[in-house]
Image (cartoon, rainbow, N blue to C red; front, side, top):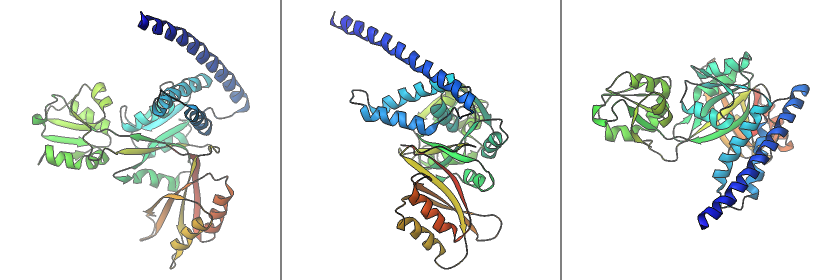
Length: 354
């Protein structure tokens, strides 16, 4: 009887929650109409960041912050879809980790375009065939995704959001038996992330690189002696059995993804700014650049170099810093370093992923 009483109270609360959700959805539709008239962007990452941050700040439990963020992310995605239908390109095909990251950030109610390469994601947005693109940029164990960095050298697209996602690698095959495996296939990054597991569990078994984890899963679905390293979602879609989950060597295996577009994100309060530059070839040039950031109290969270591919031993530097381009200290630091740069390009200021 006590359980039934509690359930009755839950039923009453569910009705109230439903009514409030639909009221919220109605307000979102009204905002969508105004955005259409004013030709404004429907995806506003700084606003979504602020909404979730405010909710988590007020949370007193028993729901965890993680659970609340998942719930509110879906609410935001559903309400945004009522404002307008947007199109998102991602490095596919379906069931890649980039696809899962796109779903996490934009929800199920958008039009997704799977493309075959990272350059193709940029091209879809540049040609206005997609409103936004999602690309991987960095893995916590294997480092930067160089294809993504290289694209920013030529592209005028900017970063408007980022997200970090825990990556659980699975090994999949038609039979689901480890003893049947004679070849392992996957994208180079997952193969590297699972190197130790493969050496221990499949010693001597050859590996083959493929463009994506999903392409690997498709290949494995057609060959009974082949195993693919991919996501559990790929196992469901391509009718494969999971031999083992969580085979990555580091359990702190996260990948950072970027959302790219033609439109900048406004200040959210917890932001990151990414820039790229090349410097004049002289003694102490890079040291002087970094001192400008220190002097203006700008915290750098990442520095990476890439060859220009135009001249031997000439490099482009990529830097992530904490803060937004609208902040005076960041503007001052960038103005100082620009004097010593061959070129300087701001790749975007955007809400920092938790």
